[in-house]
Amino acid sequence: MTEISTNRVDWRALWASGDLARFCFISLGILLHATNETMVATVMPAMVGELAGVQLVGWSLAIYELGAIVAGAAAGRLVSYVALRTNMVVAALLYAAGALICATSPSMQLFLAGRLIEGLGGGALVSLAFVSVERLFSRAIWPQLFGIMSAIWGVAAFSGPLLGAIMTEFLSWRWAFGVFTLGGTAMALASFLVLNTPEAKKPSTSAGKAPPFPFAALACLAVAVVLIASAGVDIALLRSSLLIVLGLAGLALFFTIDALKPRSRLFPARLFSWRTPVGAGMTMVAAFSVATCSFGVYGPLLLTSLHDIPLLTTGYIIAAESIAWSILSILVANAPPQRERLIIVTGALMIAAGIAGFAYTIPLGSIPLILICALLQGGGFGIAWPFLTRVIVASAPVDEQTIASAAVPTMQRIGYAVGAALAGIVANASGFSQGLSHDAAANVASWLFLAFVPLGILGCLAALRTSAATNRPLEAIG
Image (cartoon, rainbow, N blue to C red; front, side, top):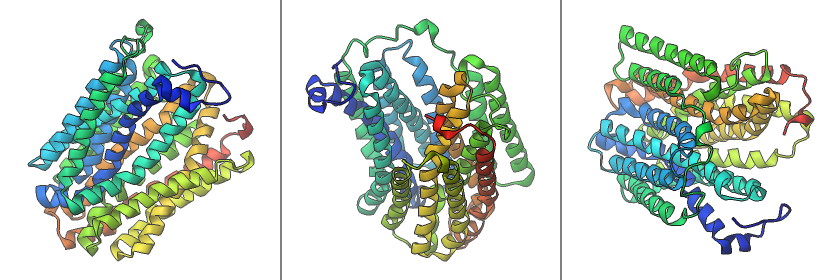
C-alpha cells in the first residue's frame, strides 16, 4: 500500500504503485450499478412495446432495489469469511448474468428475474467497493477516494438515462442491457487480475467478530415489497386490499425485527419518532423516496405514449434532474450553519412542488414545464439531503452514529422499492391493467402523481419537525 502524505495526495505515485488503477477497477462496479439503475426508465417504452406486460412496469425498479438492499447488506459481512477478490468476481458475474437475462428475455416475467439478479450483483458491487477502500488503501487518502466515488454516482445518474435512450433510438433496448453484460464480465476479469494483493486474497482477520446477517428482517422486507407489488398486477378490490394490508404489515414487522436485533441492526432506535431529529429526518427520507419514484419509473412511458416525445428528450429530462441534484449540492455546500435547517425545509418544499407539478405538466405535455418540475425535484434533493444526513447523524446517540449514516441510503433504497410497487398499483388501477393505450396512459397520468402528493406534504411536515426537534447547534455536526 502506497504511503501518501496526509496533506497532499501524490496521484502520480499512486498510479505508479498500481493503487490508483486498482481503485478505478473497483469503482467500475459503482458505475455499472448506478447507470443501470437510472437507465431502465428510458428503455421502458420500447421494451413494453415488444414484451407487453405494462402491468409489471413498477416491478422493474422495485425488484432491482430489493436485490440491491439484500446483497448490499450481505456483501459487507461475507468479506469476513470469503476473500474480497472472490466476492467481487462472483458479484460481477452475477450482475453480468442478470443483464444477459434482461437482454435476451422473451417475456416481462423473465426480464424481472434478470433485474433481480442484476440488483443482487450490483448491490454487492457497491458495498464491496466501499469495503475495498477500507481494506486496500491508506486511511490518509480515504476522503479523496470517497469523493471520487460520489462523483461517479453523479456521472452515472446523468449518463444512465442518456445511454438507454441512445441505445434504444439507434440499436435496440436489448443492446442497452448487452452493454452491461459486457461490463459485468469485464469487471469480473479485472477483479481477478487486479485484486491480487494479500489483503484482497484472504478473508478478514476479524471473521469471528462479524455481526450476524439480518436474515429474518430482510426476508420480511422482501415478502412485504413483493406483496405490495403483487397487489397492483391484477386489480381486484378484496384481493388487492388484502395484499396491501399484508405488505404494510410486513414492512412494520421488518422495522420491528430490526429494532430487536441490536447486533445486526440496519437502523437507529426510535426510527420514526418525531420527538427526535433522527426520527423526523428518517420519516422525511422515507416519504420523499417513496413519493418521487413515479416519474423515474413511468415518466418516459407516459410522455412517449401520450405526446410522442422522443426517448432522447425524456432521457435529457431525467438527466437534468440528476444534474440539478449535483450542482445545487455543490452550490450550498458551504452554507453557514445557522441556515442549514432553513435549507432542508426549502429543499423539501421544492421536492413537494415537483411532485405536485408533475400531476399537471405530464398530462399537458409541456416539455419546459416538465423540465422545471424535474429540476425542482432534483434540486430539492440536492440542497436538502447533505444537510439532512448531517443532522440525522449528529443527532443520533454516539454509539448509533455509524448505523445512522448508513441508514439514510438504505432507507432511500427501501423507499424506492416500496414507491415503485405502490406506483404500479396506482398505474394499474387507473388504466394500465387493461394494457397500454393512449386513453389508459391519459388516465394514469392524471392520477399517478396526485396519489403521492400527500406523501410530499408529509415529507415537508417532517422537514419542519426535523428543524424544530433539536436545539443542538449545527456547528457540532460533522
